[in-house]
Length: 573
Image (cartoon, rainbow, N blue to C red; front, side, top):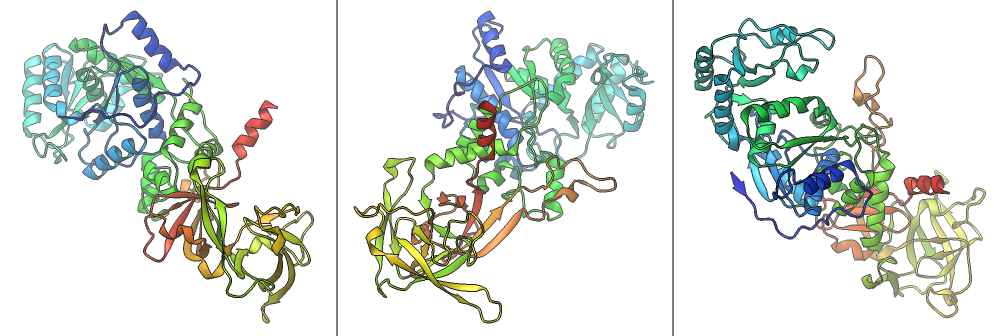
């Protein structure tokens, strides 16, 4: 058992959002002194059998955020009752994810800390005639349990004597029986309309080494038995779970009542579900194992380490969670809403830079050869304190291929023969000529002239043109690889599949586009992994850990277009 002194939280208390029933419940319990003068105590109890995803982020924000709001405490407790699937790697990643989101736990615990106490409580239930050892197989137990419309049948071993049950259970703990040969079950009600109350299994035999207790135990408690008692030991006042545990709540209370221990209470709220996203550990593991993604931290993955690598900010995640709120019914949230909060946060904090992803060379014929100007560029128009930077300007530039059309379509106002545009922070230029590849006929170089009287910021720079485009000086450009990410799935509900296929048939073949020869302004040469910026006119990007000296790799976090904000604006008009 370990504790960790809580430092000043990075994350704020719950912002001024509309009231929700979880908060209302806490307010009511404080008012009625349900727990006397005890502080509000919550817990985040992940199983260390995989990496956390955006759905877990909602639970983390609720557990920690609500406790912070009411000057309470939150424990991080690992539900490590299944040694065959749990690893220290997952423990470490979960701790890193919680801290990245901006929270710090008051106590660090493991369900395995309580194995001795849980065993003693199991002995008590046996002595009280509330638990028995069952020799039925797993399949037989399922058969005897009945259905939603038919009552279950009592096991032929249900009425063993207390002495026999104590003998068998202690021998189970000593390792005298093989895996699966016996279980300990609670003796409740095989006719209960709630299937969870039909003599649920408390312990199973499992000869497996545990990542913390080693080979001390060969019986392990089931989640439903360990969870509520662990809450009680930690004196958790508000145990918040997702809605699939609603039917488990009577069992949660039954164990606590039978044992006469601290009356923790379970409260359920809706899971976070997103369009174009799957939040199933099993399916995410399949994506990793089958090589559909590059690992748990692939920026297309909904894992917290994945979205962190993509460039999402913890502030954006927290703001998103509070905006989504909580409900007593499951629904689905548009992915565009999450992207809106990421975009909104990055707009405030991300410095600007110019980058050309698909370069087209431009030559300014009337610009002096060898001359280089240092132009002032604004780092962030949303943050005056961010100041300005110097951007080199020279005779040869790169612009985006999409910013030039030899034969412009209707309403195309960017560069084309005979048309003027402004170069960002620089001059108004006019296209005079093009050079084409002799074989393909493609334009490979554009020749322009500039008006030296139109430099941005000068007194005479008030002449208007219909378009402004970005650029990078060819002589000073930094080469980079840019990875353009889209949704991992092409279908809004990826779980809906055609007969005979699985969810991987809905994978988006265009979820990743690699741009190998992007040209960036020189200010980005020193960008470090994890740093974020806005490529002007293109979107928000983050430096990937794959970057090496002389070749940076940038991930597109999110594009500039905000469809969710437009939907909200239209709905309110």
